[in-house]
Amino acid sequence: MKFLLIFTIFYSHNLFGSSIASDLVNAAIERTRHQVEYDGSYHAISYPNGDVPSNIGVCTDVIIRSYRAIGVDLQALVHEDMAKNFSLYPSKRIWGLSTTDKNIDHRRVPNLQTYFTRHGNSLQISLDKDSYLAGDIVTWSLAGNLPHIGVVSNKVSDITGNPLIVHNIGAGPTLEDMLFSYKITGHYRYTPEL
Image 1 (cartoon, rainbow, N blue to C red):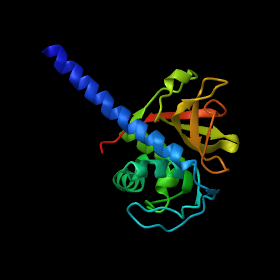
Image 2 (cartoon, rainbow, N blue to C red):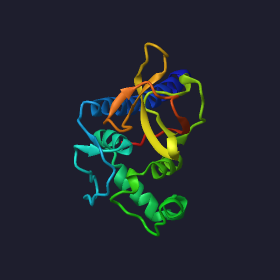
Image 3 (cartoon, one colour):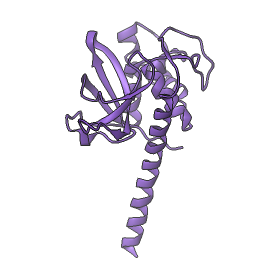
Image 4 (spheres, rainbow, N blue to C red):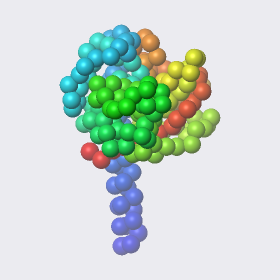
């Protein structure tokens, strides 16, 4: 009986976590079917569940829209956490801000990194492809120290065996083998309660 109870709890927990990760991956892959022009310009948007026009976006919008598709509003979550803990976020240091801005805070990679570290699991950065599970969030530093973010998919490259990443690096949301193409700066697992 004790074994059955432990197995049931373990199985339920893994099924729940796997279901969220699977739903997130499916939502991210679905994003690759949209024509999106790379445009990170500032827009006043509604709150909560606000979004920039659907035909534009940047790397963070892939994450935001994928989570939104599974019922998670990162705009509201990041804004509420920043409002209570502004000094823990890099907005003052990087952008010289003294308060939150619900129109753009969630669309900035360093803010998402802080949020995922505070409310998810910040995992070890590794060069082992098997460390990266479907649904994980990865951040990189591109040339010129530009931050970038993407979602690990459940598909792998036929050539390298690396997990393919859903991201938008300038040509709209794509699925490609780029996990180790740039310096990895963060590895997160964020599976909120739905």
